Image (tube, rainbow over all chains, first blue to last red; front, side, top):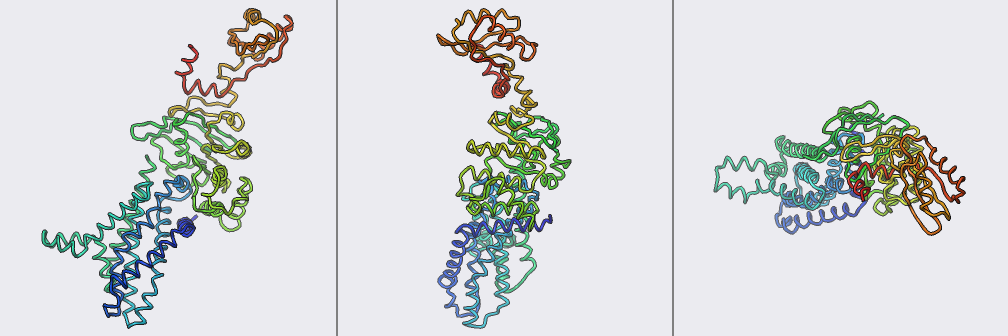
Length: 247
Length: 322
């Protein structure tokens, strides 16, 4: 059977797993509530008096920080805890097909949650004349960022059979990726160190790369940044799983 | 179908499987015996391609499990220890998933699922989620998964663990029936299962094969094999002992049970005596002496005794010296 067929079968099962339990619904509701809260209350959407979704997207790196690891933490740790990993990896599929299938399923799930934020687009279009191209671009950036966080959670969940441990480790890694480009932190570093070093560190931050998307710029460097985080994390997941099996 | 040559596996400094070799052909049911931690599960995990071997060669249906894992795995059905399955899926969903990942589509998939549901008696729980099932049903669900693609090779790690006596009987019957056309390896702690199901048995201890033969052959390695058990009514023990000990074939007599009326004893033959010879001699003796015999039979030997004497020689020796 084709590799794509295997990936699809695994992704379908994984997706079914989300919706078989209340996890999916709880997650989507919390995500939408928090997104709404940050946009309208904390972000001051109305006070800004501008036809843009900046108030909405600025908060995404922080929102994802906790919500994406919550989605990704069970990907492999659950398989290890239940012992189904033994079942899955003795099926006639390769390990990377299983990894990609599981990753795609949860990414699709996050994309679905993101799509459900469409009322903000309607709102901003009703109130003014925003640049919908910029909004579209920011959505692309947002889902790439979600994918990067997710791939990191996927990697940490392969490390342990305990979901809580996996959650905490991935939050820490994601937090690092935010902070090394977060203005208060970079300003602090600027005072201590040369600007060159600060630039290098900031280049690893999701903040720096997400900024471009928010302005409506589809820079290939930003896209490559996120895709390479995904690629690297998934590759590492494979290495970790192989290590687990070799004992 | 399954060829294992000089297979080894070490976890760090610990050698879990040490240089074992065996073969299983179509039509054979191979029983894997051994104490806990002897390396049974590790060996099975290597055969199914879950963990890579540290040394040696391993092929299934001619495909090397390391070089051509996908082709080899396609031929294998596997029931891991503790029968894991996805807790949040329904039985039907789980079986459809495994059928699909085995490459079955459309009508073939539907037929395969129906077949195993019928074989494993899962009709009643088809739409329940796995986590709500009893252990027996969970076990059968995972077993159904392993035979869904009608594999040529079946690896079953403790397939009857946690089942009630009726279910055990059903699973054994199923294994024996499938064993006619497939190559099957299964591990167990229940020794009577070996006699009921296996065409050959291997005993593994501390990562090495310590015995390999048909259940019949293994039984003959028992000290008990060939001994004659005898129960006599109304004759003093001393008299019986004295009369029997002068028989040319008798080597040793042990009293099993003694009451004022009856005595049960076991007579061990001298090595090299023909099968059943000692029993015939004893029968003739008791006719001559006019003993009232209640029971007389030749022991076939017992696998559990062989198992104990092979896998824990120190303890057995200690008991004997007492």
